[in-house]
Image (cartoon, rainbow, N blue to C red; front, side, top):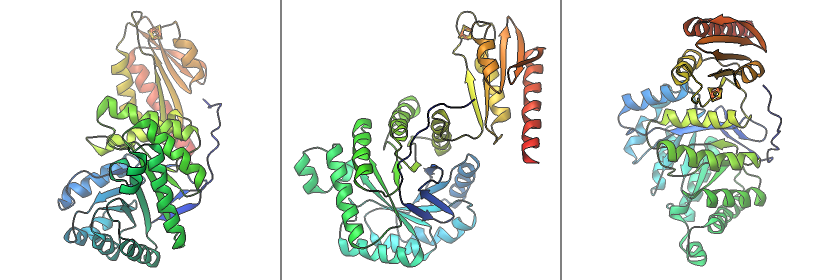
Length: 361
Ligand code: SF4
């Protein structure tokens, strides 16, 4: 199934962190952050492994003190994707993290304010080829900017970003990404639109402290999708309270829904109604679990009855439409046969796996 709308992406410079390039025409990367204490090395490395398996391109880890930075070599030796140290208040932590081999640093210019300290970090980053993300956050804006705008609105966020960009340009520092975030969706969108016009540095987008479950996913999807549709955003993070793996899965789903990422299974399921005589949720979950590791782009439709079922099933790569309790299985618009649910799921999985093997060879 193809998406008719082509998004015209803003052309940005490229920033590099380890093996990952952000910006330019590089794929939009999905990132997340570990949420266990870094000193709990077992949980940290386990979480990194699960994030990598779920398709996370870049992982941020909070390093709260100098001592915790000693763990960087061992954590790095167990990670396949680039790692970014989240640093607040104490610039010595950023210097130490870089001396221990971290790939990137996330700084909040709102809480490391002394220019001399930021200059030291940048000089070290330049020597070690470390990328920095400058994270402008509504919760920690420059006090003069905040006083001028009276509230941390989009104009205040954009002005803070402009202040940071001018400072970095004075230093001729290039290898950085900007993020401009608020927990307010509209302020985040507006601020990013202003900054996207003002400069051509790569942008990390997301809604900060979006929340959990339904509200967090909805806020993140709304903010990130609108910006991506405008062509803005080179790397995304969905911020959710809870298991960070969910952030990555939702991030990839947003990219898939917009047709930006064409990888893996795009599952279409009918919402069900009174006509439905089977448990579509249970069936779709089974199919999702069986095929979650398939990397090739495929659209699979699972439909509950004959009203819209055959139509959707025929335009998908594979589809199941129920006729009473009988599953009608389609491949590329052609009816393969009528089966019970178990047979249909088994056959569908076999067909998809055969297709994947053929693509690999
Ligand atoms: S496909 Fe059929 S069961 Fe599913 S929502 Fe539409 S009418 Fe209802």
